Image (cartoon, rainbow, N blue to C red; front, side):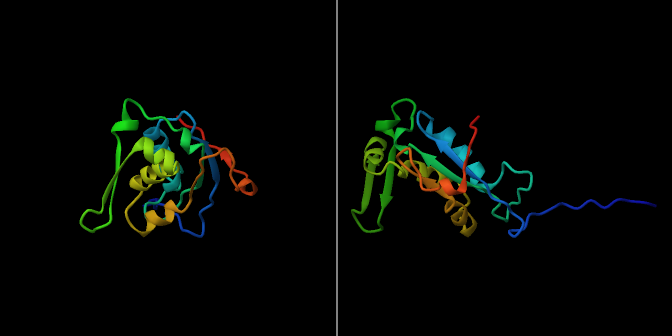
Length: 148
């Protein structure tokens, strides 16, 4: 009897080819933009996606200070940090965080969508967020990332 054996192909870190993508965040809604970025960082947009291997691509985000939030989230959305000491909790509104550190909102949102292990930390290192329109990665020839 002639039976064919089909095996699932798993990507290896030696075989992964990484592309560079650039995204303009001006006027984009935060959640929709960030979920697409997290998908590209994880590599889920590729047919060769393997859960235990970092198959993702590099992503450059420009104009992070011009992100859009719907509703009254600029005032209502809070970012909380806690040092571990009594009285060490700091609460910052989204508009204040965007004024002080414009890249933090996108970075924290993407980090929350990645795995919480060393693989997720490795994926997060492929994200580059800038508040201006310029970036130092022109030598990598990034392509424009099409957002749905």
